[in-house]
Length: 319
Image 1 (cartoon, rainbow, N blue to C red):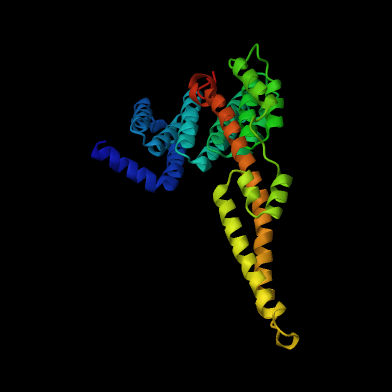
Image 2 (spheres, one colour; image 1 turned 120 degrees about the horizontal axis):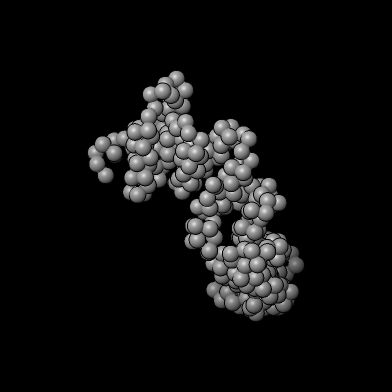
């Protein structure tokens, strides 16, 4: 990157919040001075910054192009590019503002609003921001043009949040004969119907095992370190409690008995014993959750087409 480009990027990054409003103001008062050459320069700089993975710098030049351009088609193209770049840079506040700009600048273009909503929803979903993504999808699912894609991506969000029934239902609504990934959707649906396949552990047996022999429930769930720890401390504290009662109470005369140490030792042992029971149940939960996560992670990987097929899912053309 040349010194000029590095300097330009530094100025834009530091003063971005001041520069963009200024560009908007200049665009309003001096529109006649904005020519094709300057717009072409902004577009070129944006592409060059993107090629060197300076995504935020590329976004700044793209939004400058959007604000300065007068031709609606050019504005839409640069605006959509700015939206993609802001999402790619992880600048979701700027992305949301870009969506608002489209609503303000093209209030009558319903098709554009829906397209931007889809694009924004797709981007923020893969940025792990699920809630606003689902709000966008809920508004788009009635549109035949987006319906199958929205349902497919929405099912991904459901699986990501461990909601297999909702995911299965959305996938079943997809028209497999029209959807480019109908076979993949059917395959995922069948896997969700079968559910995780592993030797599931149960809490009641684990609880009863650890109640009888501390640590046995943890061993049943495959957590052997927890089992050894629970058994060791339970028997150690139980032994201390037994000896305290034996030497401080049982083997002493009535008037010489000391109940303080036995009571304290018994209290400590009881707390740890109950903790052992809780840990046994928790071990079973962790075992089952771990194997369920493995299953759902495998399901999520099958949605990979939503991220790798840029032509279909991301750069779907507006016009």
